[in-house]
Image (tube, rainbow, N blue to C red; front, side):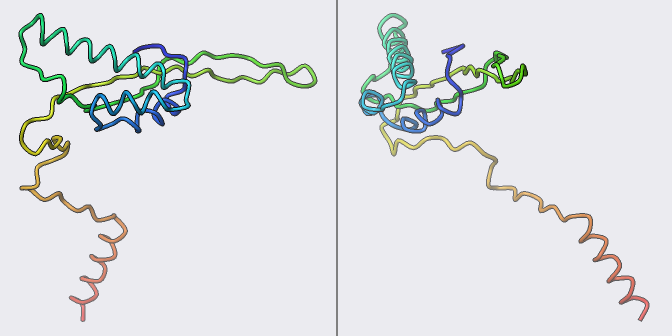
Length: 149
């Protein structure tokens, strides 16, 4: 969903409620959420579900609609509309009306454990630890003093 007239911060509050939930559970959550953006997110979820139904029926992809869950739900910034509000003594205050782009991804849980893939580096190679420059300099100075004695 693009160019939705709600701030991304407010949209993220609703999207956090449905991340990782089954589609039916997410629809029920959105139906009883008292936020204005919940109705728009509900329409988006229904559209994603209809797209999955189309893929399973028309494109002959093997998708089990009962196993679908919300894999990812993201609200990004859209363009901002700059507006001016009258202020006292002939001045004007500027403010911005925020717009958001919402992205919703559905996935099918496998028959196994049903775990989501974790996004991150492999655990085989440990990450290098960075040492601040001040500690490096202090360590070198201490080595020089020890060598001088």
